[in-house]
Image 1 (cartoon, each protein chain N blue to C red):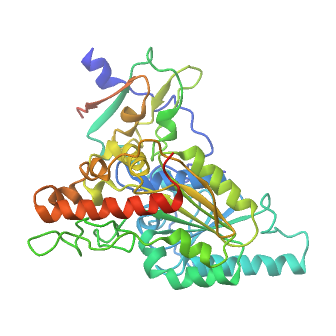
Image 2 (image 1 turned 60 degrees about the vertical axis):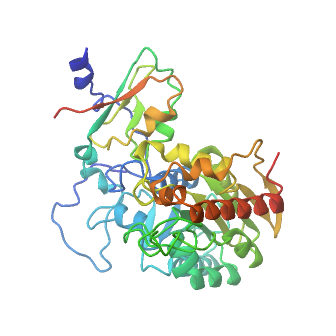
Image 3 (image 1 turned 180 degrees about the horizontal axis):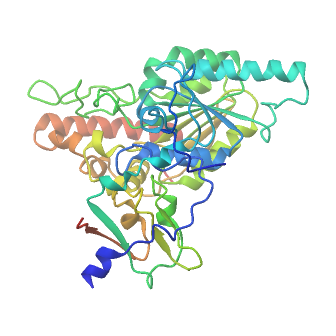
Length: 97
Length: 318
């Protein structure tokens, strides 16, 4: 399953306007964000609550580590992760761009 | 320290799975229904055909030429998600009759057919199509995500909008306390169609919701699930509170979580020390007007009475 194809390449409208799956990944919703989640990696217990409750699939395990991090390409900054984190390891800070 | 935090970025180091509800969808920050979609796809897996009514989850997930879905997906019009699902199911039954090796809808490992609609598309506009699908006995799991109004078009009331909520078509003002009706009981309506499995769930308990989706998919014939999914925009609250408010709606009994099998209530998520609905109302801008006058007070009492009545019928209190 390819998850990175650009649906805007060679754009044509087929009968029924059929589109390929998994193609919204080209839309980087991280640009919407005003507040950014930061994680205290020492306080994180890798329970995955942030992942469970993230509507944007942006809270994920960091490869090879025992803590979670955020995919800032997609995080919209809603702050649900900060609310559901049982160890208060996540804090939303105003992002300076 | 503060600049370290400002620079913290794990974007290239995080591990994504094979998500079937993809990021890049245009749902508002903190969207409850977007969580429901995520849980549905996680429970159903890739061998799934989703038919979706017009509504928030359709417009945010499939602006041409993009799709947030990793499953097969069809959108047609507002009112007919159930009819489209019924047609898809009938087609697969026919394929299966002609070629027994073809994907089989009644085998949940082969193929799942799920129709998804919002509260407006399900309980109002698509009600006829849903009734037909349930009455004809199609092997389809229908999921109604309930955010208590037509949010996509600008917060018009639906038959799932609770008593007292201010919406653009039930605005609170000197002559109105907001919406003047209680939520329509879709679970009982579905059960009265002879639907074998009916359940309600809240996005605040994904484990429970996903189990109910899985259970529904194992049963032949029509199934109806009602999932509670708060909307920060339409309800007017901070986007970070979505899960908390879904949980509070359950704890106050405004949204009871239960299962019905063959018309009988078979399990109820019991609540100990059910909280007064006032605590939930206070959290949202759409109920603000209820707290400044006698009429508002009467409306809160009326809503509490309705909740108490349902709680007694369901045996909600532990």
